[in-house]
Image 1 (cartoon, rainbow, N blue to C red):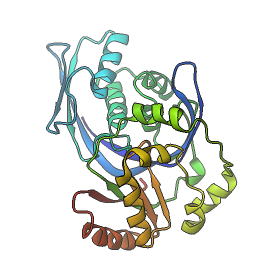
Image 2 (spheres, rainbow, N blue to C red; image 1 turned 180 degrees about the vertical axis):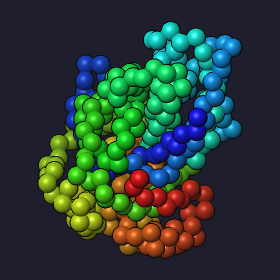
Image 3 (tube, one colour; image 1 turned 90 degrees about the vertical axis):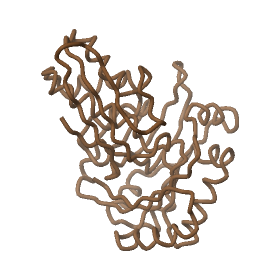
Length: 289
């Protein structure tokens, strides 16, 4: 079975309060984009071995891999007597704030639900996926936009935005950012940051693709911490701004930065100009999917 495993962007990310389980309550809007990995699942009928195969050296191939953990959870929970080979063809940068690992895990849940003939309902898959990672439930849903709350794992698909397609230029510097470290420093540096979030205005800006209005509304609580630790992220934001991009934000805990533009043509134009000055960065043109 071959599955596409899409990346995500956070159009808005508010870190609210520290939870007793040491996670944080969040409020974020996820957007699914067409930058994707490929997951190939092959059944092993003679043994119960779970094998992860990936050419990218940044991807673990042992029991710490989220795909492995997802398959193992299903195998143990439902006493599956078969194993699986999981081949990951990586295009989403690792550890960039684009949700690649979580998306891969969700693809494994969805694929093995069919290959192992589990026939689990969506709600059950979502419940199980929360045990693997907070971003995984979003990718279980077949939705392009969703509001996520609690740990980021309570998902409300935004069906009224189903037909919306946004174009982006995504820039990923070649630095490793630890999500756990960013949250730890967030607590140490700044405590809580409350903002006034106008849902109606945000939805209006999205629906109308009003990039000027949207630029003043998109927000990421973690940006100031990541920018403090990794100034390169701030330089990328400035370079996008200098090229006339109005809506610019860091995704997740970074280091990926994206700019929302009006069209594919504009995105390609920004891409060409960026490549002249960002030789050590990975730059992608993506859209909502």
